[in-house]
Image (tube, rainbow, N blue to C red):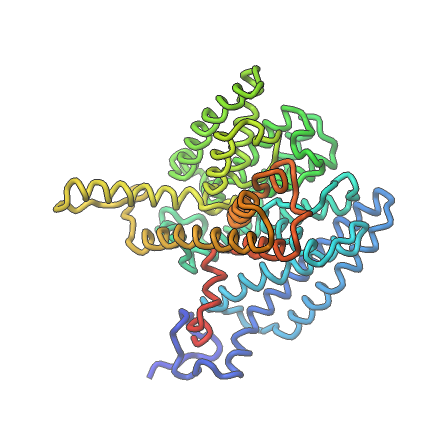
Length: 511
């Protein structure tokens, strides 16, 4: 009989059971959870260490809040250390698919609670709902904020907000490349199928891939800092905005976002927002000398096409509403399209002033998203491309019903399970946005505010529409219940919906 070695258990999918390790026993549940809590403890220790950065910033500026960050780091330091010590093992860490689901969900739910401590302890004194919302928005690189006046925020807390987005950005890239394809979420298994081809493999070992991605992420961040410095920003402003630009997060040090800075700074932002929205796996291939790694990528080509077409569509309403300089109109159009498609959430001006057509276009761009394996949120270019291929095959099959219509993506056959996953994701996306919007309506929000807030949260964009949560507004006036709902929406969107919703299936826990 096939036995399960206790030291190296097989990777079982949810629903499978090992004959020597019956599912459901308390002892096995505890033992199986050790790797999950060990890694969660490591993440909490990293969060605790990261709080030293804003502490030193406050100390450097001579503000009294530096001690608040040391105090804020204690809970994550204590719990993280306890989890690591209690769950450490002498052998290799073995994670089953179910463990990965649980670890991913726990990390994105628990970590913001600890990362939000500085928002409550420092001079802002935010409520738990506000602090959790701000922290979730930062780590998921959404960019929505409950802080009404950034002028009252001290430098350390501004740096902490930016650092949360920068750390969240690299975490999102690693999750998108290493975890989501393994979990086969919403068509993301297509990335796994591509990388399994030896000729397409990024690097032979996951550790090397992670190191390469981290190096590229850091290098692009430094280039962005230099670009902002050249555009006239101060060192503090450049560092903060570089972290929130490449991570496509959208937090700013100014109440008017990038509108407070020079046109040159906005062009720099456009370049690096798009850089953050490109697949980092393609960057690694390009660095390794693979010819056409960026130019031939179908997602990048689609993103470029959307940028050009949508920018031209925005130019007309800008001209019609008073902007008569072509260069200025083009800059505002390109900036708005880039910030929406990449789900960054910056604003150079309030695009709602450009008329109804601009508002409708902005709402549609909210749901487009960047490339897979990038820091951007949204539905993603890969899924739109798969949807277009599938729709084209349906049309051709209607015209020629007896002909076998092949479906391909990037020159390779498109599996049925990928198409089914993408179609399921679209249905689930609409359902989640609708349900959250309905719940927000019960919280007292009007139709535009509720629907746009729901869509921006699930797409991880940042600003919604309307006078309250639009590009010139914020989420401070929303009731606490709405903030908790939107926090859930941001986490759901960042985890590609299914990664979190699968935990609600009783069959998952019987596995």
